[in-house]
Length: 292
Image 1 (cartoon, rainbow, N blue to C red):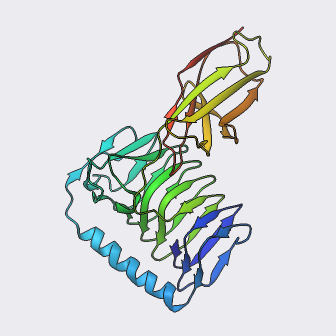
Image 2 (image 1 turned 90 degrees about the horizontal axis):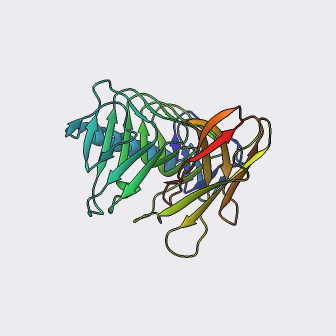
Image 3 (image 1 turned 30 degrees about the vertical axis):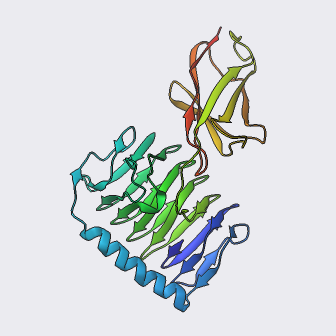
């Protein structure tokens, strides 16, 4: 991770890699944040990293655009290429899939002349050999990553980067001229090859139908499709696509919450496992919860 002016952290952020700041001098919030690497503040290594970032930014900016696509990337699948939007911005709501088409050297570049904004609980998924190390988000101004979203790739921002609560980044956060702001995040320098294990998410309810104001407990169970490892991370519960709760997956693979404010009527409850760099996102079938 790299910034130019300041790095500010709130909460138990974990950075699996190095942290650099140049020419600024203010790094705050470590601890409680943890850096599993080396912190370089206004030293020769941080200064060289800023020079390298400028070179990488200019190189990516000079790549010819191969496709101009709508601002909203969520719900789409992209193959290797250099992408721009007519509005000069990109947003991700839901899931964006990057398909490497069997080529581990496939490169994806998304050029946003102004901003990159990801929605809460959005994700970038890699399939068929795509690697986070070869995904680049070129941002002409500032980037904002929404709560509990998962971004894969390297963010190269001309100005600032704001990483809000619970965001997971499989990649690098690099700000050329301004600040990086963190809040209870996990940022991991991408491995040479990273293919997440597929998962399956199921959802159950404690009572159906339920009476108005009767407590109802929803349990999401997240299992790996292969191997014996238990997925980690978060599950988002929605009612007709409206966010009602975010819950952590425990050491048995369950995310559980109890609600008493379901009004009378039919509720369409879904559970979406957000995934991690090690485990792919998955979604449960809908439960039709009747309250009367």
